[in-house]
Amino acid sequence: MRSSNSEIVIGNARVVLADRVIEQGWVAVAQGKIAEIGEGTAPAHSDDAAGDLIMPGLVELHTDALEAHFVPRPKVYWDPIAAVISYDAQLATSGITTVLDSLRVWTEEGASGVDGAAGMLADAIGNARDDGLLRADHFLHLRCEVPMPTVVEEARAIAGRPDVRLMSLMDHTPGQRQFRDEGKLRDYYRGKGGGKTDAELDVLFARRAAYQQEYAAPNLREIVALAQRHNVPLASHDDTTDENVADAVRDGIAVAEFPTTMEAARGLHRAGISVLMGAPNVVRGGSHSGNIAAIDLAQEGMLDILSSDYIPSSLLMGAMQLPRRVPAIDLAAAIRTVTKTPAEAVGLPDRGEVAVGRRADLIRVQVAGDIPVVRSVWRQGRRVA
Image (cartoon, rainbow, N blue to C red):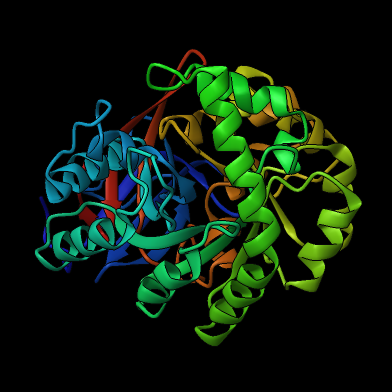
């Protein structure tokens, strides 16, 4: 690996800027930042990109991928730092140089998996970062299930950390938002980890409904106030109705994750709230949950940000497929949905764009048929993958 303060010149590349693509160009890096961008033949002794794309490193706001490394099988818990390191390597080789690690900030009676592990995982991420073990730049996204009795207490324990960059307000109560149709939630739990019987689900759903009735409203107020106190942007989750949109506007939401209907997406867009959809939704051609297709929103000009959600490699794939699926979106605009726009949404304007003075977080991408392949990754000018 090169030292982070040595100069690098990458030539013979298609350079993806924020507003256009240089079909033959070069990028120079010095002291961890982009020092110069040129068109045509690169200076002597440059690294040859062989006509591949050079673009900003991807910025991911919502990924559940850490969970699969920490709990690779039901009731199997991996060493948290080892889990973070392997997860980080997966992100880097997918082209992700900045990530908000999504942590579940709540504990549920009888639940298994990563519930209640947010503090432990946050510490593991911080320790791995401090020891210089990580390739990507890691921040935290606190996913707050507002009806849960302990969510405020658990969020308070983490929200003051300087690496917290986003807090999302979620409500997966049967009959609410994404699960207005309770049958969808039953199908989800039947297929998860050996599944639950209908009798067990009846008990779970009754408890969830009781929690929602008792805790959701006061917890929501507390979480919103906590985010405002720490100057952390807020995200809504699974907005479905005009009422959900009105709540998002009232709460000062910056990013709306995965709206489920065109009605909600239109209202959010009109309110100036950035709409985030899943890149797997783009790659698969629709939602696995039967909700609105991301491509439909893109065609209406209402798709601002993509997230890999549950499969990191989908982030680049989804962005690269947008121009083919929506001709009004060119490559530069598509790449903004996974770089510049998400970075700005969470207060990181120093990255996400190939521009002089920005962080030299860069990726080299070869396109093999319809599959983008990440060949090289630099973070602050240092080769990390």
